[in-house]
Length: 261
Image 1 (cartoon, rainbow, N blue to C red):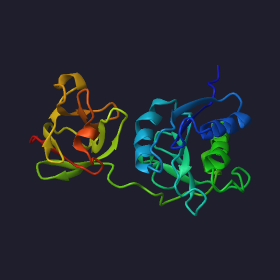
Image 2: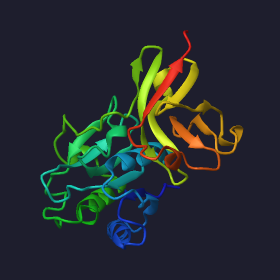
Image 3: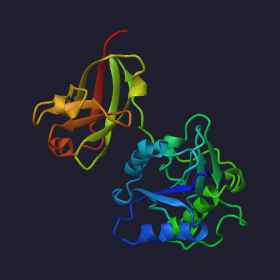
Image 4: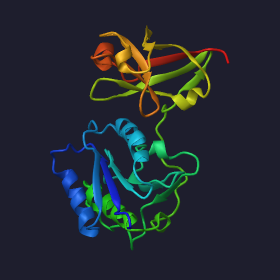
């Protein structure tokens, strides 16, 4: 039996705003048999970085044929470019060229400008590209469209800086990037950055955070570090909030000391 097309949605519109429903309605109007999935509509307003970090672990969990609409777009209606990204694994995303799609711009990715007038809406409303531009393109892709037909290749998509750790004497350095609803802090340190290195210790904003396997291995109120399910180092407080504990947390420095191989 053929698999039904899947389209997912991520935005900062707010689940109760009615805007997500309009995007989904547009897809269903064009592709009535689509399965629609909300990744989140609670990205903090205008927070492109937080949106990128939500996309990063969610998109790979869907079938390869899914199409992902991502709209955190403070520059909607301006000269910022609308894009389709196809990553090295064939995953397809549509959204603004503002860094939101950075996690999927790795080796083997291809980026296309949404510009073909026969396939891309010619005069989308200047304030709602999620509904008037990205949703129709996503429906076309999910229905079997070839991304390469959407427009020319883009060689210089906008990329967010600081999404990976930097090597430093004795280990790696990174920063806190985003907080989840529990107040756990997602950092720029990826497990893959460390490769085979063993962790000797973690500090955040100069404070030690004990490395544990899972939240329950810490004491109540203890500042912890652990590898989150998305593959990034996270800072947490057992049954508490690391974001509240640290106060001003975005950009807080994280240092991972490693043992010599």
